Image (cartoon, rainbow, N blue to C red; front, side, top):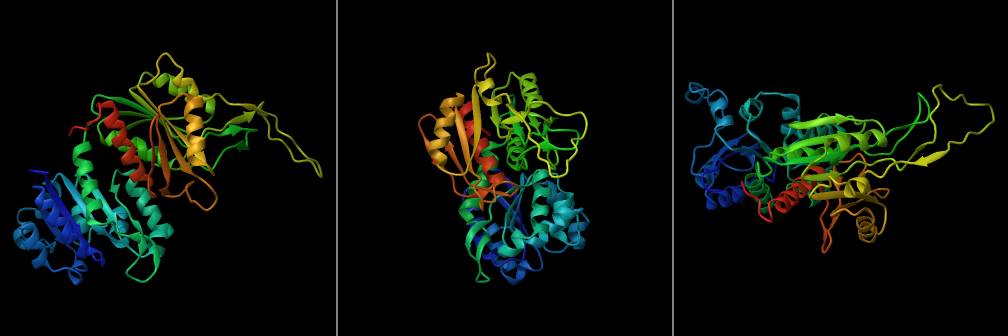
Amino acid sequence: MEGKKILLIITGGIAAYKVLDLIRRLRERGAEVRCVLTAAATQFVTPLAVAALSEHRVFQDLFSLTDEAEVGHIRLSRDSHLVVVAPATANILAKMAAGIADDLASTLLLATDTPVLAAPAMNVVMWENAATQCNVATLVGRGVRFVGPAEGSLACGETGAGRMVEPGDILDAIEEFFHGARSLSGRRLLVTSGPTHEAIDPVRYIANRSSGKQGHAIAAALARRGAETVLVTGPTALPDPPGTDVRPVETARDMLAAVEAALPVDAAVFAAAVADWRPASDSQRKIKKTEGGSSTVDLVENPDILATVTRSPQRPELVVGFAAETHDLVVNARAKRERKGCDWIVANDVSPGSGTFGGDLNTVVLVTEDDVQEWPTMTKTEVAERLAGRIAEHLLGGVETP
């Protein structure tokens, strides 16, 4: 990391003590680290300790006359290659999502156009609260990267997700950012995402529980690496990932047509949960319920988008499929890879209670021709970053370049 400039924003969580080790490790690797402490952060670590490890003065006050004479908060926010928020409390995430700027840390985050990496740390109930999850989803949609949180024993005595990941994990995420940045420039990639809606009549349709969060996160991760990224997506409530060419569709047939129109590409990731069947015919008028009666819907099979592309004359160099499974992940994933003719399969556990559909965490297994990798439970953003890194390594012949 020689020559890399990192702005580290330390907020008020008990995990702040771990950040001292992170600063030390970053400095050992040659990074220049400038630090901002919130008022709450000083209850856990001292400015003197942070300054000694970073070898720079510590910034705390938004209204320091010396700094503001140089428009310090603007300079600090932009004179860096990466902004890291660790620990990222529920409070700072809420401020970031809402655009609040009431102290130096939040003002810097609002004023920056530099990439941001956040390492959340909070009580499990706070992390799972709908407000926090909404804030995280908003920030992901704006391109903020996340590492963690991890599951385990928390300082409050409870157990669950909310623990800040270890300094080594944050360091890995920072190195991944620098080593993976723009590595896919000049490459064209395709991602499918979300569900498809198959009309029964003008009011009703057949669909599934896919939110599109994983597919959208993958498209965003590829775009951050510089790829020209086409995102073909079924109906979702998600914002368009920054830097992507979004092509919205409704049905499986629409999705296939949009995918074929996007070819040729260097690699394609089929993360959409495409409906396997559709009504044989959809009524142009609403089907009325009859008193005491019953109704049937005849179904026909939808086109197999993944198999169609793998057999296409314009087959991409790398084709990655997804398999939503409730049991026997590896066995079913291997069988699907063979059956569809794709290069890799990402199998994710969608069994009841997993929280995968609509949630922010995912547990996946990556199955290739000669390898099976069981990844730990991660946020969907982390899954996307890791998969994007693997794709970059494959396309670049095994080595990602900055």
